[in-house]
Length: 61
Image (cartoon, rainbow, N blue to C red):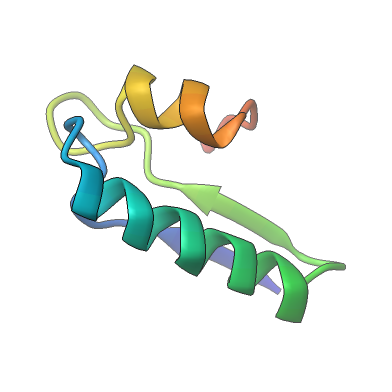
């Protein structure tokens, strides 16, 4: 299954980061054979801060 996460991941807010980290870890556990992505779009997609901290290297486009 392909799952794309979209939400408050365009900034550096710690609460948003914590939520994204926990949610992404859980999605990877339950959908480990699928493709789990964050939305990548200007202004509303995942920020470089989130990419670096989550060690996220996938591309959704």
